[in-house]
Length: 484
Image (cartoon, rainbow, N blue to C red; front, side):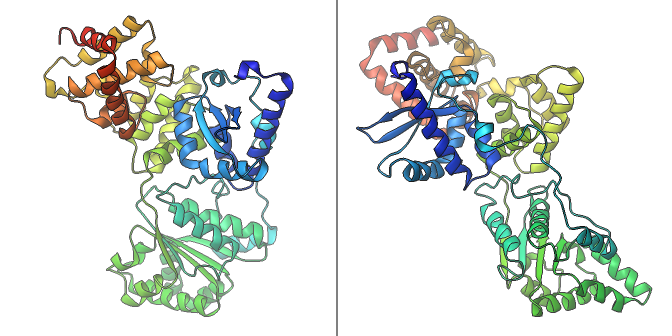
C-alpha cells in the first residue's frame, strides 16, 4: 500500500504526523517522545476501520509506546485530524534503518538541540541567600523533565509538580517515602529548582536531616539557637531529606517541632522525605508523626520492568548514546530495585565504550552486571530450566536447527521480526520450550526478546490451534524434536 503512494500523499502523511507529534509535545515529556518515536511515522489511513496506522521500528518500541503514549496519541489524532479515528500501532521493518520517505526529523519538530541545554539561571540574590543560610546549593541536573515517572511513582511525581507550582497551598507538608535509590531526592530537588524558576523572590533551602542535626547541635553548643531560628524564619520553602535520621535526637525533634508549627501557621512550604511512612517512624515523637501526615503522604515503589527500560533510555538519550533492546532488557531484568544502580551500570558501560573505542555488546553488559554483584551468565539467560534433565545446550541447538530449517537467522527468531514464517517458527519454539523443556512462561518470554507472559501464552495456544489444521506444521515440529 505504501509503495503505491505518490509524493503528495506521502507528504500529507508526514505533515499529519508532524501535527500529531507537536500536539503530543504539549502534554508529554519531549525527551520521552523522542526516545520512543524517533523511528516512527504514519504508514496508512484506513477510512473503513477509522484507524490511523503508525509504524514503529520494532516490537520493543511498540510495547513502550503502548504503555506510555497511546492515550496522548489518540487524543492528538482526535484533536488535529478526526475524532472518529483512532491509533493502530504496527511494526514496520523499513523504519529500522532510520531513513524512509515517511519518517520525519523528530529533533527539528520537537526543537531538540544537539548541544547541551543552557545552564539554568537562578536569581543571584537568591543564590547568595542560600549560601549565607546553610551553604547547600541545589543540583541543577535534577528536573521534572528528566524524571521518568512510571505507575510506581506517578502520584508522587504529580504531587511534586503541583507543590512546585503552588508552594504552601497545594500540599503542605508533602511527605514522600520509599527505599533508597528510587528518586526521592531527585523529586525534592526538582521541586526546589522549579520553584526557583517560578518564584525568584522565594528563599528555598534543601537540607539533609544530618545537616539539620549539625546546625541544631552547633547552635546549642554556642548558645545561638535564637540566631538559627531567625535564619530559618527567612526561609519560604524548607526541604528536609531523610527525616528518619532525627529519630532519638530529642533536642532536634523539639526544635523541628517548633519549626514545623511556625511554617504551618505562616503557610510556608515544608517537604520531607523518608525511607518509610510516617506511622512507621516509631522512634520519632508521636506529635511529629501525626503532623507529617496532615498534608499529603505518597510513596515511591521500585519501578516496573517497562519503567526501568524507559529510565535507561532517557538517561542514554541525555548522553546522546544508545544500546540495543536486548542489552537494555538485560539490565532492566536484573537491576530491579535501585534506579541509581541503573545509572551506575550505564556509567560503567559508557566508560568502557569510550576507553575501548568499541560498541557495547551483550557480553559487556553481562560483565557489568557481574561488577555490580549480579551473578548472571549467558548460559543462565539462554538455558532452559533443567526439569527435563536434558543437556543445557539442547534448546539452543533446536533454535539453530529451526533457523537452518526455515532459512532464517537466529536473531530474527528471537527478536523483532514479525514476518509470518519467522513469527510462526518463534511460536513453535515457544511451544517446544514449554512442552519439551518445561520452561516457565517468564523464562520463555525472556529468551524471545523479553516478551511478557501473555504474549507467550498467546503464541503457544495459537501454534497448537494452527497445528490442528496444518499437517505440515505438525511434521515440522516432529523434525525439530526428533532425537530429544
